[in-house]
Length: 188
Image (cartoon, rainbow, N blue to C red; front, top):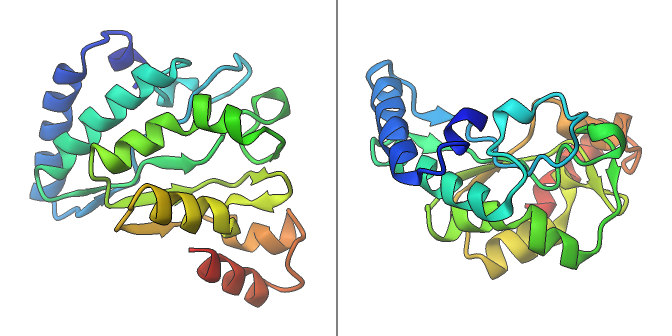
């Protein structure tokens, strides 16, 4: 992804993504857990190569191109990791994040908004991290108010592997795994 982003050529990426979608569909694959559209601004982030880099505008243009290309072939894309992943202390992807809403909207959310509104993304993956003490996998403002209410998202949200159990085990905002699952479902 970082190599494609360095081209600054969303049209080229859309052609590549169309081929990826076609190849996936011919193998019977109907959903990709991609693209990674987090903005990577900390050089300690170990997954920068999966992103479109540090520029919110470039990331949004590339996100739209990838989503449109793959989904033109009948395969669902899952932009990830929603939201503000890879920006915890030390570039970590599971740590608590304490950002203002303004910083989120100006830097870390534009690619997701574009993927939903312009690209028509049909799925999103919630991130492991928390935003101001609320894990992204059970963050009602993020998953319902913003994503569905403001942006008009009509698809489905998936967890990032163990992120729902982390509501209980890592973030410790649910007393049990059952409660963690309930909180995730109720948040969106």
